[in-house]
Length: 101
View 1 (tube, rainbow, N blue to C red):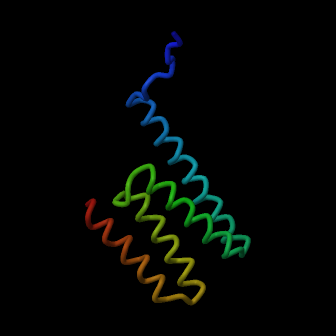
View 2: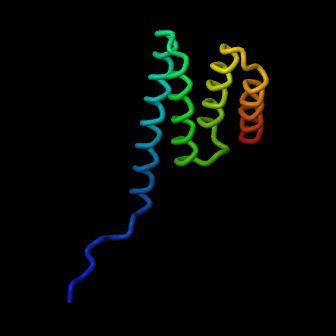
C-alpha cells in the first residue's frame, strides 16, 4: 500500500504564497513605472493590469494594493486621452479606499 506523502497546505504556506504574489505584483508595478520613463505606454498599461490581477488573486478585490493599481491604470488611460475609462478606474479605486478606511 502506497501512502500519500503530500501534506495539506498550512496557514504559513498560504501566507508565504500571498507574500510571494505581492512581491511579484510589486515588481510589475515598478516595471510599469520604468516603462513610463521609457515612453512605452502600452507595456506600462500591461504591467499594471497584470499586477492588478495578481494582487486581486492574493488579497481579494477590496484591498489597498488593488485600489492603487486601479489608480495607476487610470493615470495611463488619462495620458492616452481615454478619459471616461480613466474615470471609471479612478472611481473604482476611490470606492475601494472608502470601503477599507
